[in-house]
Length: 234
Image (cartoon, rainbow, N blue to C red):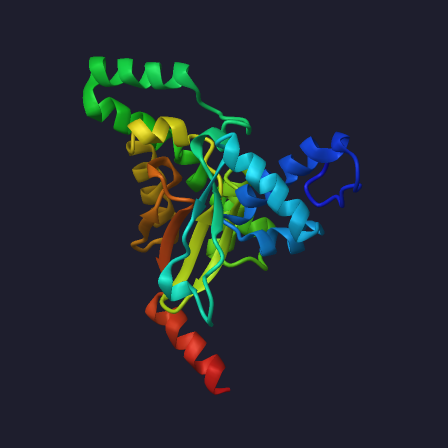
């Protein structure tokens, strides 16, 4: 069943496909409330909560309290439902235990430098594809070009505006199991992003270390800030 397909209602036979859509929606969009899922998937709140309860029971999801600053208004803030590591196992992982064992062997025989060189080589797809994607899609900003590249590699990436620039969000990480033990993979990706943009960027969160999404802050350059200011004035 496709992600954006409206499910048929009624009948236990549709439970598993709908449950998969709930999980994929959280994968693509990040931690979500029950109300947001119901609206996004065209389901009743009761149906969503039934699936959420089952996914919580089997360990695929965990309920989180929203950040205080994100809550507005009266009443108890709605909980956010996020994927656990077990929940991510339902999606294709490019690396498994064999990859971890291979990198452990590399670290033992070649040391940290060998692992680092491997991580840099793996992250080379960012620089190799950047100019080509930007030329093919001139309507995209630099961060959006990166999101397109990462999405093609299985990261389900998107871009959000920040007061100081933009934030590259990766809702899925196909190497999270390996990166948990070898953070050099995350570090190499961050450095590759910095290199193609020609500016310092900062990785704020990673799925590999328990966050719901990988986020990288891309600050605006003085030229971009000046352009934005002129646009606001005009």
